[in-house]
Image 1: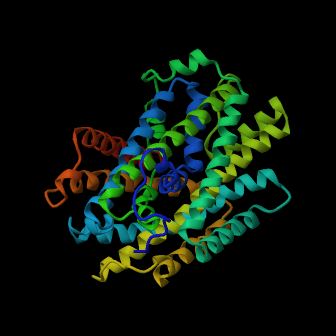
Image 2 (image 1 turned 60 degrees about the vertical axis):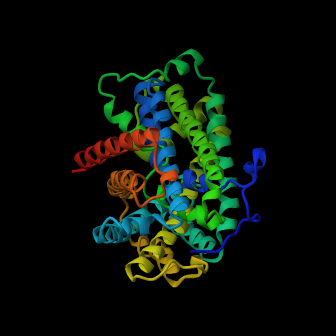
Length: 417
């Protein structure tokens, strides 16, 4: 793996630790994509703010999974993928096939969703031009940049996401008693699918497993960094939860109150149009900028993190030792960055960007039960240091994640096929 890029050799104490965090923002921003915005939009449009509690549950579940990934990397002082190898060679082949197929579909999906926002902001440019341009920009930033640059850029984009979407939620002036009432768990008739979608959509898929690589890129390689890692994921997923709550509030106020129903990513554009009619063009532009930042952070994070993941998979499959030089210069890393960028461009010209996103959603749903299940096994293994093994709370939340994501996976497959 790569050598440390942190400017300190030891963890700070107290509030000074806030200056050392960063990988959690990268993981959370990467995981919260336009699909998550669409899920929260549809839930808010259908049920108002009644399902806000599901967003909180989703944030807690994802926090537990990211914490488990980071804890394994620090406790075992090796990567999660090498931990999977101890469970049998099938894990390596499963991951290899999955990451190749998923990368091809995801590359087209994220370029498409980024282009949707840009086309809405500047409609005179063809959709395909925005999509290809977004992919090429991400390719260049990741090819020539390094993790420390990526972290700073992603943190800035997270700030844009947070300010624009939370600012829009403040702008619509939600009904505070109704909002607070939405945090009381309940299941209105027909809402189960929406609840599972909200819980499963607060920053997930394969990028959660990539968190461990960003931890190592940051220079956190030993067990003494555990407390900093806990603060890192805690802050990141609290902000993520607030972000998605804000999205549900906006949808509830703008769409639910007006009796409008929408679907998918195109519904995000419809919401922008409603904001334009209600507050003016500046409100639509504000929201669309947040839409774009959400898409582009997902693109950048995957181009970097999953490429690191793929590189480790190649070295593991070839029984090579963990690399101590910068993986971002590895030919395998760059090959996967190219795989994410150029072959998927062929799909962009099918004229069905939303269908591509749906296909990606189904593929993404398959991975999360695998991740939750393997974390449960590895973090409770006798081969894992006893002081780092999961306690009852971690096991309970990871068990809940396994059940929820298995249900979501089955539901996604049923819905699509």
